[in-house]
Length: 312
Image 1 (cartoon, rainbow, N blue to C red):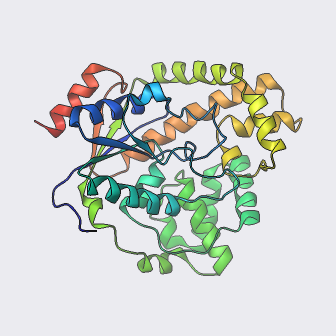
Image 2 (image 1 turned 135 degrees about the horizontal axis):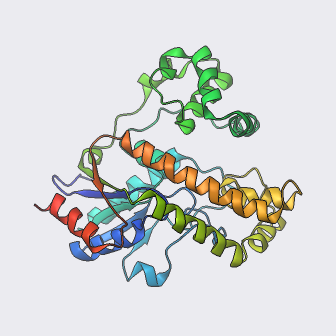
């Protein structure tokens, strides 16, 4: 399918709970032909509902949304898988003269879309589990130290807390015996549409954001998060799955295994999500060509700033 010559693809990113959904929907209405493509690594899963912040029909406001709740939670779905599916959706939307709007805070997904990964080995789940355990106990910097020993060239290029990329580089070495720095030149070229992606990232006041995150975590537990996790586990979804490894779900699994109290699960979830929001902001600070929007996505001033930036 031929690529449009000048059609802009929008990306609305930023930390969790910053109002990305509201801003994406508002932009879609403003453009008149906008369609949203989910760029959140938890919202992709079926059956995983309460703690995912998937937009409701009311929140979608009649705007078509794609790549939400379409992956079985038992599947090890990767950033490369999402990149392929998102690329197909972009071409599909543009084939009917629509405008694609990527909405979500999973920076690794967006980076993989703009800078495709090389075709690496299939994930070794037992190895990933061991490395994840090491990261959670000793911190992401410890994995970076391991990477410096086995592949100093790629380690020098990666931020120590950029654990998705650091951990993957370590996995590749121990699975193949080859350095990622030597394999990366084999990565495929970016899709032609990559250069048409305009990235906006929300930057709300941190203290206010943290308050919202804390209250939202409490609402998730009040809404039956523990019961949802019980049902998911009973249906055969393992605690080690990507779906149950996400914020909230992971701590509930620990509670159900008797490793922490319910109160501890709630408080740890709040801390996890606050830390995640901080990492998301740090991630997008390192991305190229970010247009920063100071505030929450539901604020009129933020929308006006976006429009002023894109349509001066």
